[in-house]
Amino acid sequence: MTGPPDDCLARNEWICGEYLTTRRHILLDAVVQHLELTAVSVAVALAIAVPLAVVARRWSWASGPVLVVTTVLYTIPSLAMFSLLLPVYGLSATLVAAGLVLYSLTLLVRNILAGLRAVPEETRQAARGMGYGPVRLLLTVELPLAVPSAMAGLRIATVSAVSLVTVGAIVGYGGLGNLIYAGMNTYFKAQVLTASVLCVIIAVAADLLLLLVQRLLTPWTRATGS
Amino acid sequence: MKTLSDSWRWLTDAAHWSGENGVWHRLTEHLVLTAVCLLLSCLIALPIALVLGHLGRGGALAVNLSNVGRAVPTFAVLVLLLLTPLGRYGEGPTVVALVLFAVPPLLTNAYVGMRGVDRGVVRAARGMGMTGSQMVGRVEVPLAMPMILTGVRIAAVQLVATATIAALAGGGGLGRIITAGFNLASTPQVVAGALLVAVLALLVEGAFALLERAMPDRSKGGSE
Image (cartoon, rainbow over all chains, first blue to last red):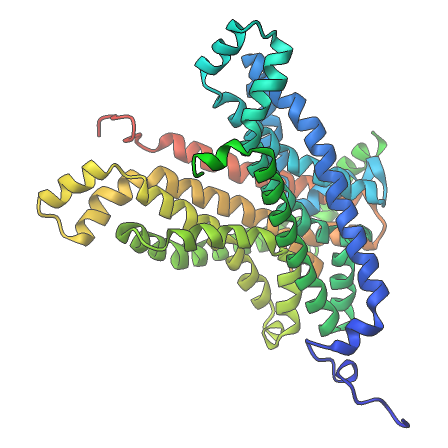
């Protein structure tokens, strides 16, 4: 074992088992940061989106402004969004999470609102006739019926968030994006490909997981074959 | 608020608008890049979508492609292409990556629009003895136009936004003002660049909204 090692790292190959074993901890840290950023931002976005959608459904004058603001937020490019929030949050993980929350809002609010609006009027009247108050109607009838549409929005928002986290590399909190960024500057092929593939795997896994959650939450849709 | 006034001062300084790194040059780069990529993606996606939509095949392909596109980070594709031999050709990797990301929304919307055309109308056109290409050109495309335009709008706004990321991988465009600001640790420049990109994206969105409003609305039985 003398002289320079002749392995795939030295040859700078795209696929390199040596890279996986020697940088296991770096990859694991990046994946954890990626998952944390995605999970936190989607969770916060969901916590904001549900009340917003309920308000927009209850008072029709509110739906216009809510939809316009969230759509405008969605139009702002991700790199610009992170930079616009820079004066507020500084170079931090919170900055990336805040940007992702704003992006996810549009998708979530739109889908939850569409779900609430699709609840048949007869269903609501039946519940009212059974003596349901507005809060009970919302919690036990309207929101459960809006779950399929809301989950569709949640899946899109999550998958988009996973891929957008990478742009956070510009402020140093991009999860796997950090590895892609560093790999680009050093022309480190194995690192770029491995991190990119892991991003896609995370996105697909998150999508499947949410699909499973959706099926568990809405057992009644399976009987009708949808 | 100090940052905002500093950014305003940065934006109103004429020195920042001229030259190789100036706003005008970066803005031109951004618009040319966006326009070229939009044109290329339309040339690739629309014929495929119109043919598939006319034949009624490949719907799963169109929709799944769109979902896969969302899962793959643009930034990753950009860097991957940059490290391939393609990376030697200046803007080559950027153009390929941007076209890859603009094709799915175009394809999906045009396909869904073509399939959404009233089947009765299509049958009537066939009964009148129209050939396949006549039906596409005179019946299906005009009726699907709102959906096709929506796809073009989504693709255009997405291109303006995504072209910014090219700057992370050494490409041109307005994103360069932001990344240069990060490297100089100049928050006013970063925010000024971000404002420029955000305004451009909103302008493109607004322009398409106006264009759509100006279109004849056939779906509601409006007269021609």
